[in-house]
Length: 348
Figure (cartoon, rainbow, N blue to C red):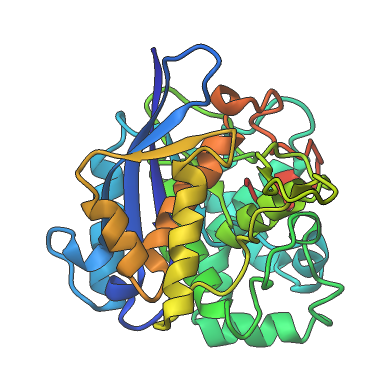
């Protein structure tokens, strides 16, 4: 039986990130011929629950780094709901050459090496950018000011942002703190110590988790698109009742609808999203829990949607792996693009 341990992280750059960063962990396995692999969720919790953590950003980030490092050798993949890079055009306009040159001189072997086979110029540039990022921008606000001076958000989108319909760019007013801290506080230190590799810029290594950028919204949009016979992900259709009408198949309710909030409608939508993976509506992977429904109740009951998003981040990883039919991996299901070696890409 093939198995992979997967972690999903719903990221936050808030001051009290310990309450907003959520982590899910489970095991993806395939042991039944003709049946989709199963992701068995074993835990889901806010970062503030980690040992030596607290509600503050610094405390929770430090504890999360320790958690990831402690699971090195047992976890195969990490899905992170946050950007791993910026667009090539934005990198060109940010004028980071001085910082990147310094990073190139002082970069660790972990960030400079481990690039995939083929054209490595983009991956090498990404490694130097990661090393230089904290030196170039000493705060989220400095990062946003520099990005805003480089052009409109529309022209600065990454190729994957367009293809996978991500809601926000990394330097959007809703995202810039989250993006800044994902790059400076999570990815950079873990890459520097070779405690993770980042796809597709770096090649996988035995015993080192491979981190994939994920986007729950993009996953839900992809499933909805496929249900309209306009995408690449197979999903079951619901048949109409026998009423003497056309007898055509009807679409299941859309998954990409508001689910973060305290109303009954928000809770029903969280239930609908969970059920779509639990009942096999998404035919690439099925979701199960290792308890009597407590994890399901936790994710559905979490009004902010952070708990559910961490599970969706893990599921984004699952559907992107060869076990779930992606023969292009380590590229996303939508195909290879060499610009991803610099810009990164969304897996969903």
